[in-house]
Length: 229
Image (cartoon, one colour):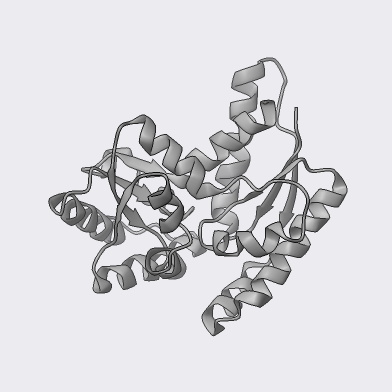
């Protein structure tokens, strides 16, 4: 079994889900008392959030590259970054290490394509929805990616940072997300990507009029498979 180098803490709320899925998938595959071999570096999200707010992405690249190098040095075989937004920095992090990074967008695209879906809505942080670091990987895989309108982008982002990252799950916010997903369906979306690792805390398949692709579940499940290859 390969050792997974997990960079977590962005936020720690969703990192719990990664840890649980990784161990459950390994146990399911191997049986008995088996669990995943994981090395985890948990960052202080306050530092990264402050850098995001000020536009200091190079600062975040240094923090995450340092985490990846420490995990590589400790014996990790590959890196899993437990967040969508920080995949913006994957090209910079890859330059600092010699082991692969399992990209969250690639894992998600493969899952969607297996269902023969071509047109998907993307929900996530404002950075994920308005920049191209996730969208371009999905588009390169042959998917058409749709975003909410500007006002709803702000709403989705505010719920993530002001509620979900702090462990707050509000019914009113769930209803707003459901409204946005329903509107995306009207615009032609065939599925919806829950493209922030916290969104799954608020929205599950039963809450959505579209098939959901929870990047946390997909990414962690794919990481477990990679560990067993």
